[in-house]
Image (cartoon, rainbow, N blue to C red; front, side, top):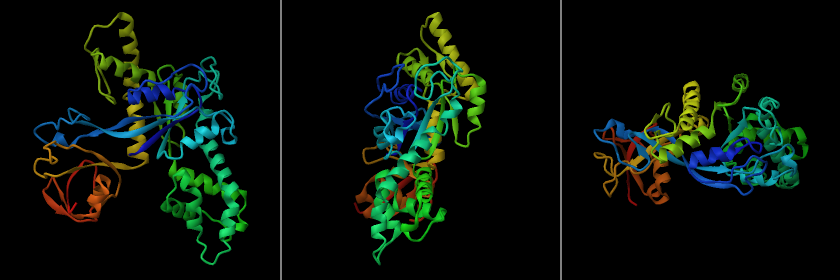
Length: 392
């Protein structure tokens, strides 16, 4: 399952975002380090369900009238403060918790309500633009420190005639979530001495930075967009990273109101309707949320998740079925499962995503839309419905 981590300084709204995105109750407070132990939960990315191309909806619990919600893991970790890579605050605990994440949502207090330490200040007193490079800078320094501390081992291995720098670095960096392919890609991008004994601090820092960029891409969530000065949002949008304006408080309020039957709203919708009885103050609060939705096309919570998974990680959604005519599994359930795969994945990749035994016994695949057999090297597209034929 794709893992998305929430990162940022304390009190920027990470836990509120997490609660809104997972419907899980967590500690939320107006003070640093409300979160100590990481929260792990299930959230979803949103896409069109293939059942829209049929005469009836699939009825899957993760499908809302043709809008499909595909599960991902969401991780909320302790807030990061300056010097975290040196162990300040809960720094090492925070950074260790990020090693398994595929992508990071950096939650920024766009209102400027809190300073670099996560301590409350007057709105506008702190410039949130200063936060944009904060997380990646701490991660780069932390990873560079790990490389430095273990470089002697790489140098020692380099004395062997069978030495391979790719293999040595994979062994060193697998704990950070780097694969052999990641290391090979990064080394192709770098200029470095052939002999590890001649590497200097700048070489190792460049390795750490490039590896972090490849394995931990970042989306900036400009949170508190409902109260942020417009100028802050404009300047944040100038970042080289993807930036999504958001109101985690607004999303949480809408999800709670929807669960109570007060509003008609699905996560990621660009509007909602009030369907139950609400007080004047509740109506005013909902209308303030509507203003943000009108300005930004939604609350931003779902958009941030989708940007991270579908844009930065370049994932597609594929649907394995057993019956290519009815798009059902062996129990007659229509489109029972949705799998996130790297763009460029093949039917064989989908087979292994379903189960290793299915992949090992793979024979061929059928495109259920056209009812035509497709090759093992056929590149899948978003929304493909595929029947996998296997000996398993």
